[in-house]
Each structure stands twice: as C-alpha cells, then as structure tokens.
Image (cartoon, rainbow, N blue to C red):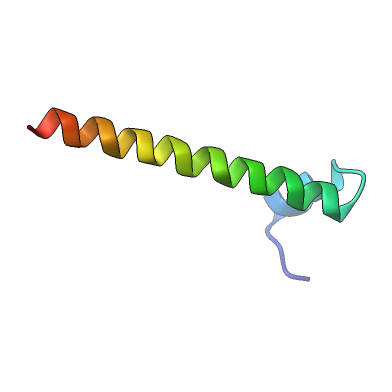
Length: 47
C-alpha cells in the first residue's frame, strides 16, 4: 500500500484502517462543503 508520510502518520493514529477511511470520508465531505461555500461567496461577490 502506497501512502505519503502524512497519510501513514494519520493512519497510525487510528485503531483500524476502517476508522481511518471513515474519518477521511468525513474530512473530504467537509472540504467539499467548504469549497462550495467559497465558490458560492465568490460568485456573489462577482455580481
């Protein structure tokens, strides 16, 4: 399994790989939500 040092470190701090994936899924969702919010604010500022 190939992963960056950062990923390996994050992975090591979770009790199981399933927990790691679950946490990562939530993080990805939050990032997507944040990006959409930024995009939305940006669109409003342009008009």
